[in-house]
Image (cartoon, rainbow, N blue to C red; front, side, top):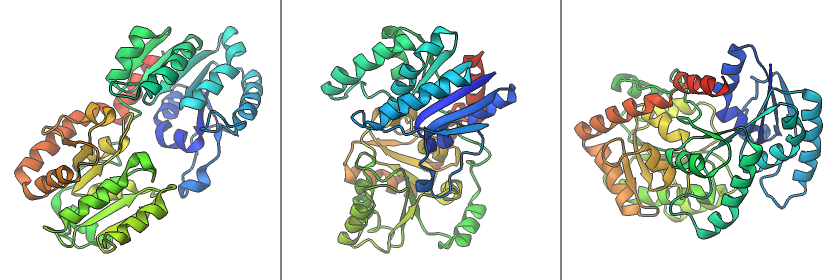
Length: 371
């Protein structure tokens, strides 16, 4: 049995689909990947779990002629590969793949598509519904199984689209990497990584993009350091907003309180030592960093969007604040730092909730879908 996994970029497959590849390998499948090679941008990220990898020039932009080249190359790969299942991901990866796989599907190849968060959702701009909703509905006719990772997306697709729809608990977080450590161990790791044992550390994870809105976290730190002068915000990720964020940090005079980590491959180490994780995104599908923090015993304060509200019950498994409400975010961060009893209760609730999003649970869900 052979499966082809596609996405716009190879880093997407690396970061989100190792559990799927592992599950397929455990059942004797051969796994191929077709996506644009962007791994040089990702600080050593490796696609080392695929049996064969094709570098296909997908583009995230629907206007790019690269997608025409990608279509032609992918069509040849599919027609010569004789795949049992083609599993596509990402908006453009999903569209180009399903177009290229039409002939193969008529010959019996099954087409799966994982939607990592529709662009149309409750509260989304009207143009998103006018543009993206009809496209996804039309392409559902070219899909055998649609996999959603949020309850909201599942409810809509199951009711409105033309293919079988499934809901999964994300793409799986490895509990062997993300787990809680006790306070003594936490202090030891902090010291080993160059921080003071009792220094308050706030982590913010994500690609440096306008949507991720790290500026909100930077401004929040102006309030936090009034109470914890040596607190440190750690920004993990790279991207086109790097220079702008560095300028904003300098403008706010926070060079001593904010460290830009770049893209890190040992994110679990930072989750182990962080006191709070903040996420300021304007939009999210189902963010892994939130689940990673919950499993690691890190309190979470996040902006209100559909991905965050899927994971966080305000005041029970974390805190939700409105986008760019800097004062409220700082208040909730300080509440987690100041009130240990309340923080322990929230962290305990979050760990129990996040167990469903663990690697083994998700692999079992995938196995049932592939059955």
